[in-house]
Length: 115
Image (cartoon, rainbow, N blue to C red):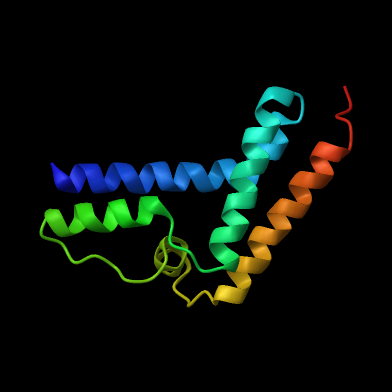
């Protein structure tokens, strides 16, 4: 049960990241959701810039431990990106990518969507 819960948290965490990265493209014409997306991007910039740990990371790690598995110690993105691309991901790159997502989001929201 704890393994399934931990894996579900991983999926939700990845979905969150996809929403942060691509939400501006999906939500340009939905003004009610723009603020929600913009706040998630700003929150993500804060997490990466100040090296905060996302609450979903704590939850996932706790679930892995309850399942009898070893929990990772680094940040969620660092842990899973390293597994995906087999290379260390420096913190400065994560911050740069997150700030870039914020900049693109602001540009997309500032510029009116063409019909």
